[in-house]
Image (cartoon, rainbow, N blue to C red; front, side, top):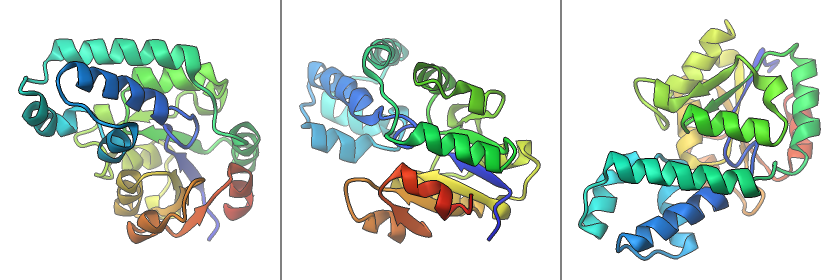
Amino acid sequence: MKFEAILFDCDGVLVDSEPITNGVLRDMLAEAGWALTSEECMRIFIGKTVRSEAARIEAHTGRPLTNAWMADFYARRNTELNLRLTAIEHIHGTIERVHAHHGGRIACASGADRHKVELQLAKVGLTPYFEGRIFSGHEMPRTKPAPDVYLAAAAALQTDPLRCAVVEDTVTGVTAGVAAGATVFAYAPLDDGEALLAAGATQVFRSMADLPALLGC
């Protein structure tokens, strides 16, 4: 298929943020009384918003998930991202090629809050490719795994979602892309991507250097 627009997730696709964000979350949950390993925290929260797991957090900590706690989490997370965030390997060359091939018809459609997405794109120098085409699940009626953020991105690009490719790295995100009607390519650098294929991804790839060819660029 010749795709008319390419829609990228952010965390784990454009930037290597998941270990940083989950490290802050793990530390704060431990302080609140719920001790998790890094692996357990990633398994529970990757691809999801913290608030979507509020009931589970409250059950383990015995405390309500307050706005003040979330504000502290965001502040600590943003500090660490500013200090330590790096781009996904090969992403700059890939985005440059995809952006040029599609005449700028690309977007970033993330489940994260807008401040985080914009902070991260600026930190790694990708903002010029996505400016004006950044979409946050926090601003939609429903965030991922619902398709709303991908439908909004496709609509803004005046493209049928069926003619869009989505690039994702989590089951939650793949589910959202599939629900939108897009063709989903799943980035899985560390495993065989079996769960991503089961969620509906068309193809799994291990290196961002391979993506332009997969998209027909």
